[in-house]
Amino acid sequence: MNVHEYQGKEILAQFGVGIQRGVVATTPDEAVAAAKQLTEETGTDWHVIKAQVHAGGRGKGGGVKLAKSLEEVAQISDDIIGMQLVTPQTTAEGKKVHQVLVAEDVYYPGDSEPKEFYISVLLNRATGRNMIMYSTEGGMDIETVAEQTPELIFTEEIDPTVGIIPFQARKVAFNLGLSGTAFKGMTKFVTALYKAYVGADAALFEINPVLKTSDDKIIAVDAKVTLDENALFRHPDFEAMRDIREENPTDVAAREVGLNYVALDGNVGCMVNGAGLAMATMDLIKQAGGDPANFLDVGGTADAARVEAAFRIILQDTKVKAILINIFGGIVRCDRVAQGIVDAYKNMGDAINVPIIVRLQGTNADIAKELIDASGLEVQSAILFQEAADKVQAVLQ
Ligand code: GDP
Ligand code: MN
Image 1 (spheres, rainbow, N blue to C red):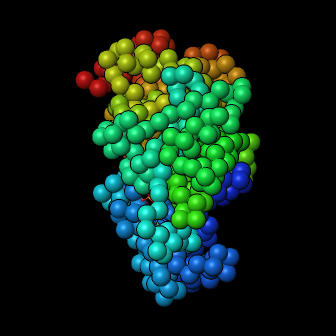
Image 2: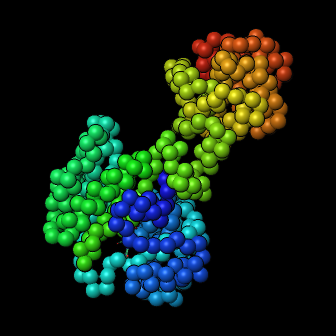
């Protein structure tokens, strides 16, 4: 799950990572109030107004602007809130901005060369260890740095049983060319950042830029934070940070009804109970020459409402040309599932405009087949797994 910059910074601050202070605002009035509050706390009366959307490259798209007075805070916030922000990381259509982060200006006036670094924490899947990736080339697109000057990107792997050790934090500060107060500040920053990554059960932290201010403070100016969905149950306060306006509507709909759904590129929609059977079904579709459009595990309670929800989610994908329903009736009875399919099909009428192949096996499978065959619906039923996959291929020809 991705969170906004302002939420990512809240998480960092909870773990003692230095951040550029800011307050989120949804209207220009709130932005002005936020700016006044920040001026009281920090003493600076310049502020940056930053669009809060789940996409980077906002600066390039005009979503990050400096305000040198309260009038400018109001004006810039008014311009940014409600705008359709297009950045190198959004589609051409862009993302609608619902809120801005009003932050203290940390590139102090007269600061001739603030130093920007890049630091991220992520899992190295090849070694199965977390690593800190960092570079002197902050503020830039890291992919560009990787392409043009790969020697300027460093990595530091962390032993999971030991955690980050002081030597490693010092090595990061050293490779970033720091000394004195800034060196000490960076070792503290990196150590806290790594502990935050582990403590928050994060999947990615990308801080670009990390800033060394002219008075040698080390702070996170930006924060891209991705949390591990599977660990959210341990962090109810993070779950509350979810902003569904930023998420794919199909994924949101699936989560709301408790379906495990992952969109893929093919054209055969799959509705299956159990993750293992879902994987096997996708394999079989592939083997028969097709391509699954999704992974969908309807779970143990495939009643009419759930089957209907699953149909609707699968059909939101316009690439889908056939649907294969493969249910094993172990705990759930096949006739109940069949009734669910028939009801959903009748309820949805013309909304279901692709052929459906159903394979129901297990408890009451014979009654289920009768129910489907007698329903008069254009649903083909299959008994054998292979038969189902072949029927799918046949309707696609
Ligand atoms: P991104 O473009 O989405 O990655 O957003 P960032 O938060 O990284 O901001 C983009 C750029 O805005 C940064 O690289 C900085 O150069 C600039 N910026 C951010 N905060 C401040 C600030 O407090 N003062 C000034 N003058 N510029 C800032
Ligand atoms: Mn950035």
